[in-house]
Every structure is written in structure tokens, then in C-alpha cells.
Image (tube, rainbow, N blue to C red; front, side, top):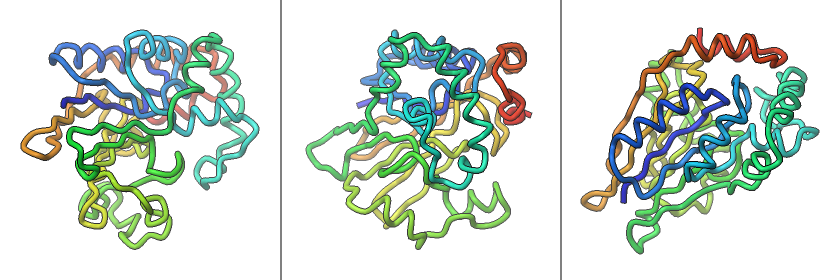
Length: 256
């Protein structure tokens, strides 16, 4: 089984197209999967929805799809709650760009997708946006990777929220995005959580390439290949500044 998985396109058609072209050039895949946050916060939300839905890409929903579906519901996590007043006009602007068909596709995406290379649940790979239970709590990478990124540990192994979201999770591999950086972390010595990094808006590690990962089931394990694709970032920045989105400056800063 061979899967190509990416996350956090955020309405950036130039990065999205670059990733899809690179995937297509690498041969046959059993599935191509987008791990949520597809349209909101970029210059061309409708084009990104079409690019994925019309080419047979599978997808799960992320927190920004929840915002589009429930625009009156303030998010429970502190980060997005603080910026909610700024996000509301962006949500309405994004929604106004989508056709009814595109909106229907986005708002009917599943929470997760599961891939089973064998009959054993521990071999399964599950794709979500953020974590096994919701679209808010971010899963941080390993201690070493956290220290490199932040200079300190942001999330410890005994974190109560993490323990809650992994309760009952029986697959061996979790693939996610949401936190905009690469990462791998082992939980409970049996679950490998792999962050595929963002296609767009590299606010944390500042790698402006569009990124995705290839997962291949080989010799009773998932082999991971990291892929990064150059594209014209300035095209997206120019389009973002001229698309009419209110408060575009917040998203522009994620590239700078």
C-alpha cells in the first residue's frame, strides 16, 4: 500500500498545484489524501476545493472547515479564540467564494480516514487533521524537535489533554497536520504520530516549500518519505494582497 498525504493547503492554489503535480510524477498511489484546512486563509479557496475534489483526492476536515460549517461557534482552543473576531470576516469572505457544490464537498468531509494494509488494527494508518478526537489540540513533535523549534519543551508525554485524545485509539500510525511543521513522535511506545507539515503558511519552521509525505507499507512497517516542492511563493503573496480578503496581513505574515 502506498499513500501520499499532505495537509493545510489554506487556499493557496500555487502550492496545491505544485504538490499534486509532484505526486502525479511519482507513479501510482493507492490514495492521495488531504488532512484538512483546505480553503480558508489563502487567495483562491474555490480553486483549491476544485483542484482536490475534481482530481479524486480524499480528504478529512480540519478546524477551518469547522469554522465554515459553524461560523457562530467560537472555537474552544485559546489560540483561535483570541483571534476569533479577526477570523469571522475571513470565514464569510471564504464562504462567499465557494460554489454550493464546493461547500457541500467541504462540509461533508469525514473526520478521519483509515487505511489497513493487513487485518491487524495495530498496522493501520489513520489520517486526521489534528488528533484522534478533535480539530483543536495540537500534537507537538518529539522532545528533540520541540527543543530545536522552540528552545524548550512545549508538550510533555504526561499531558492530560493528549492522554484524553489518544484514549481508545487502536491504530499504530496517526498522520496529521494542524501544527505547521514536520514532526514525528512516539506515544505510549506503540503509536507513531507523524506530522506531514503544511503545504502553505510555514509559520513555525519557515520552510516555504510545499510539503507532503509518502507512506509505503513495506516489511510490516510504514516507511515514510518526506517530500518538498519549490513553487512561486511570491505569486501567492501577490494574490493574497489583491484578492479582497479582509485582514489578509495576518496570513501574509506566515510566509515572512
